[in-house]
Length: 249
Length: 199
Ligand SMILES: [Fe+2]
Image 1 (tube, chains in turn red, blue):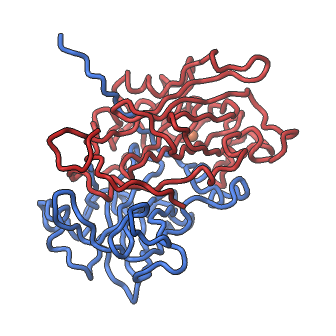
Image 2 (cartoon, protein in one colour):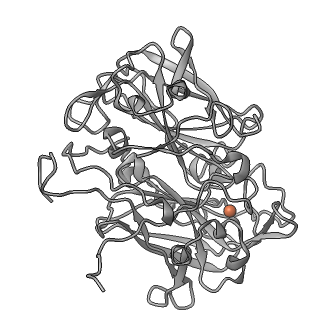
Image 3 (tube, protein in one colour):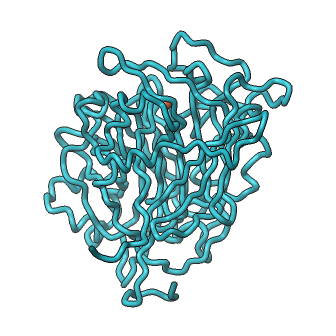
């Protein structure tokens, strides 16, 4: 499963700036109320348990894995219904370096806002040709792409009349287990973003803006698909000349 | 004004939501066939060195209810304390595993080998442990914690030593329930809230 890694001490992870993330408890997102720890987290410098992590080789990925339009039907003549969208971007770390060869997974609702999941009973129909998940591994420059359809907005039980903006869920590994990140990509111009209590768990507006993908004509293909750019930044490693390590930067 | 820092800020987390299984363990979500098999199905392959153990537990909310929709990932060293990818590591130990709370009972099960103690930067060892990462609907940023073992010597572990309230140390220690069997419940809130980590 794992590709070999070099057991060089790359330095501890930069401690997470939790002010840039949602708090565990947010009264407007009701499910967080009973699921949020109340005691402070135990902070400590990372150890090899956090600094190492699973690696996945390119051999894991099938040729259709990052094409959600056909990876469920497995048939180019049976594409998913919806507005065709290229989602693309780079995975970087806090030091601005690309994160190459890392697994990126996505999942989403179909064009009507319905998930293919045993627990989703929304009245919008399933698309027989849409599964709603994809995966890829970043290239040597940290770049990734998915071809998919624009997911629909959907209602959900929270306050009286709640709708999620169009969004794609994203899971990224990085190279350290404590770089693990799950987040959501929104779409430029969606008016529902400003009404969503899940988006609003992020109190820093410029941080929330970073989850809104930009319409990108430079990658849009005429007569085929629109592109949206979404870069992702993972935690970095601290390297100074004054730490006990084997190699410099 | 001061010089501009050229470091980037980490992308903010968002909840994994109720349908996290579609993207991470699609067969569990009822969608087999997109990939040959789900990622992280096994922490170990047949022939892994060391004691094979099974850890069972639940993720319990502040009301005492076991979550039915939690998704957990684990990462650990092999029986000799080497992480996958390090020189000399046991090739039969994947180290990584993904598992979900059962949709009806909320119970999860992790089958693996008991890890060895692992060296710290700057000297010393950590007691055998398994790192966990827990995500679910209502969890806005994935929760880090660890499983230690009651039948190991945990007395010099640097993380456990930092817990000021010694009555909370037990929340990180799996209880032996039988031969190779352990119980480890994760309490998100309330009495006996698990110690969660910021590392
Ligand atoms: Fe969603």
